[in-house]
Image (cartoon, rainbow, N blue to C red):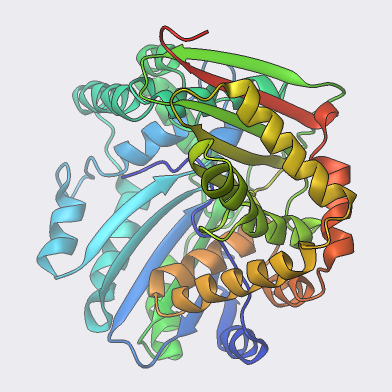
Length: 439
């Protein structure tokens, strides 16, 4: 089980024939009770991935109750009236399959990958825990300790993770994207089984559910199997839309984290729109242009040319329910001041925004990089299903074709526009990781 901080899969650009073929082979139906499902046949594969997505993540939590979505994910494997703790996973593995789950800011997903003739086993187990999950106090207390240890190992002992967590907490003044997916340690420790039950009753309902499948199964067989197991689930209504709006940022914010660390780090977060906005394609290309691979602009300048950094990372949260942060992370070499690295980063962003003549060449490289990354993902059942699930929950899966076509239209002018509009100081939160003993 995992709780990734950002997106699951970076999406790039399909060749036109690839995306046309991909989308033409996606089927969408609603089961008798109203639950929505998607399926894409891949006849060349003997495997099928079966995924269950719930529209709930850390975004749906409250102050003092953070981490509940992730806790519920863990408790979903603790047994039902028919199966014991962790037996769900053992049964799948005994059938030659794999299963796991993840929680994000916006949703929680459970998946299994199995031979097509055995995928019904995963469906039966999923149906069982939808109807008969057993939540016991002793199991909950043990699992809470597991989650607390997970937070210690993955965040509190990882200086960069602390930096990014603190940066998001400062960048968002009111939106729940300001707290971590795993939750604050104090909230996890304080959480009760009653809190978990309430969260489960509110969000784990058919009206909040999406089923996704990709693989080597005849479509009609897939729909027959789903209908027989999940068709009677009463759709009902999901929770009311949150209607969350983060107030516009009107000035730079800063955070300094001091931790024992081998190298310092510089992070910048800029509020940006999500998929569905006219600027989203240009922001996706910009993320590749700035930080994808050794030929990216930030790597070239900060690592190869000026020797200021060990590496750079850039992330754009395209597939989020609400506007997120365009994040840049620079790992600064020992002996190099964070001020110097920050100044070089600012200068590079200003060069792009002011019309660097090399921008056109870098833009084509970025598009080619996006193309390669997505073409490689076409070989993966999981990646296809994850893309379908994310797009459907965020903006609708059919939007994928329109969006990817618009990436082709991004030109130097649109890149300069989004840099000048979003990657500016008034919209920026800057974080420094200062190795303990530094200034």
